[in-house]
Every structure is written in structure tokens, then in C-alpha cells.
Image 1 (cartoon, rainbow over the protein chains, first blue to last red):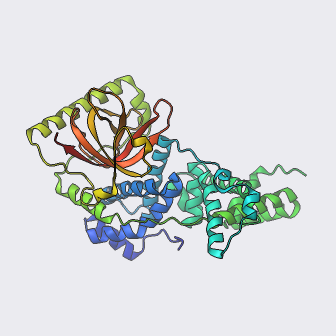
Image 2: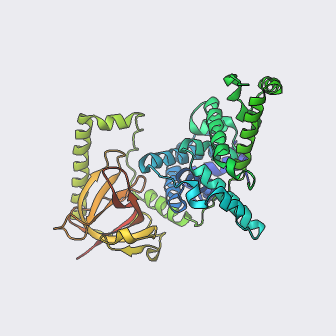
Image 3: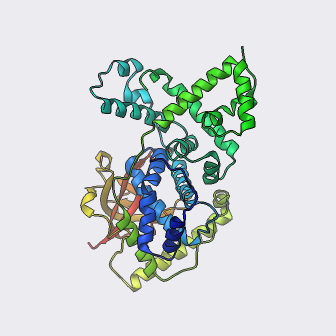
Length: 192
Length: 237
């Protein structure tokens, strides 16, 4: 399911107020609502699923510590994504993550085209793996806009609020990201 | 024929995503009618978007709520202290200043001294932040000398603490763990990352360190790490 509406609904507003008062049930609801979204964002920012789980925990601790200071000046989703992105960028700066070239993992274009894909599910997984790896080869800033736009379904304006930049910067980063993705995946175009 | 309408190229992704206002859409479309190069650019952006829309979602495999609730309960039960001041935007530059670094070092000494005093004055059982949540059996025991052969993400390593200091780059607390206090090698570096506020171990003490096994390949480092440290347990010889 893609995330479309970042405005707090009345129910979400009540949930936040209760969570701010320390209601563990409300906090758990927020955790469950955002757990996968945060995990998704962290995974694509850091490129390591296991490490992403640990960092997600750290992010949620930060979220719940800071929640009493949340003043409803932005949507909760925007605020949570901002905390998550900042934590990921901090981690990326420190880790100097190195990415393995796509061909090294998946083989050459000819090998992929010639490979037997016995069923549709495996074929779909292969396609997704190719795209996933290509996205992970983008810089952290470009990855962040791709995930926020195409996985989380945020508008340019909402992404700008998360990243604390202008919509022009969002457009420019998305433009570079799409250009690089297309160039990187052009050899696989017939199978993707 | 080459096209130099850079002002319109930058709108192509927003055009593909339906994020342009009507007036700009009209400008882009008028140009596309007469420019083959930009039609090719648009087709490539559309392909890029098509690929991006196939990106698979990653979902969390474990429910960490119990761990988070335990950590929040522990914080709620602890006496309230003054809130942390906001970081200055250029704090990294401040860290680089010698006067600030000296002040930081002096502050760290006071904190460690105080922590040591508290530990001596009132010895108590270790209280790891995530103690209630994790199952120690999920952490693979590794010796410091053999950590390079480890392939598991979560490990527990035991050794003596020889150095405790604050990472100049990010302000995280680091300590060095060795097998033998008389031998500087082999060692691993352990990092306590904010907001996992574990009390720093005392130099010379023997501890078990639970956390994520990593290798720091940065120039000048090249060492194995437990980073972040998820729990610490004092071991009595």
C-alpha cells in the first residue's frame, strides 16, 4: 500500500495526543503504523537489511523521546520521515558504504537474458532484485527521494518538507535519479 | 538536432510525475511537439520512473516493540534531568577547534570520573537498555582473536576494556576491548551510539559486549567493531 495522505486525520491526532501523554498503547499503534515505512526508508538508505533493523530501533527511540515536543506544525509522517532520513544520512556519512557493482552480483546482460526463469514469481523477484541493486548504487540523497516518491508516494512538496529543501531541489534530484536509473538499467530494458 | 532548453529539461521528471502546474505543462508539451531530443529525454525519464515504481518494499522481520517499550519504561522511571541543548548546525567545526576539543575532553573526564565514583559507591547489577527484549542466544559468542572469521550479524564478545574515549568525528562513545590487558592486540572497537545510553565501562574491567559485528574499512582504521553496542554486562573474574 502506498502512503498518500500526510495530513493528520482526527483519529491520528488523538493517537498522537495520547502517545504524547505516555500512553503505551497509542505509542505502539504509531510504531505499528510506521514500522515498515521506516524500515523501508532505512533499508534503501543504508542497503543492509539487518543493520536497518537496528537503526530503525534507534530511530523509534528518538521518535518517542521527541514526540512530546511534536507541535502538529507538520504531518506526523513528515516529521517521522525527517528523523529517519537524518539518522540514515548520519550513518551513511560515518560508514562510507561501498556498493558492489550490479554486474558482479547479477551477471552480464547476456547471462540474464539467457537464464531460465521457471515461473512468474521468480521472474518478478529477479526483476525487483535488479532494480533494487540499481537504486542502492545511487547516492544516499538520490535514494532518499526515490524511496519517498515511488515507494511512499509523497508529493514533491511533502518530500521537500521531509528533506528541508525546496521543491526545485526535489525535482532536480529526482531528475538525476531517474536519468541514472534509466542509464544503469537500459541494458536490461527488455527483461524489466 | 541538439536542444539547449535546459530550463525545460529540468521539468521533465516533474512532468512524468504529474507535479507541474497547468501553465508549465503547456510549455513543456509545446516544446515536445517540436523537439525530438526532448522526446527521447522524456521517454528515458518515463523508463526511469517505470523502473522506480517496481522497487520492492522491505518490511521489518521482527517486532521490536517490546524492546522499545522496555527502554521507554526505563527512561520514564529514571529521574528527569535537564533536556539536552539543541546541536549547533556547524558543530563538527566546533569539535575541530582546539579549545572546544580541550573542553570536551575535560568534560568527558569529569563524566567518566563521576560514573566511576557512582559505580564504586553503589555497585549494582548491569542494566542493559534492551535487556528485556533481546534473547542472548541470538548473539553468537566470538573471541576477539577470531572475530574476523565471524559471519553472523549479532555477536557477543568478552574481554578487558583498555581505553574509553569519545569519537572526535561523531561524538559517540568508543572503547577498546582486548583479550589480555598486557597485550594491545588483538582488539575490537566497541561503539555506544546515541540514543542507546549505556553507562561507559570502567577501564580495566572485564565485560561482555552484545551488538552488531562490523568491519570499519575507513582509512586509518581497518578494524573489527561491535557497533552499535546493544548491551553491556560486567563479568566478575
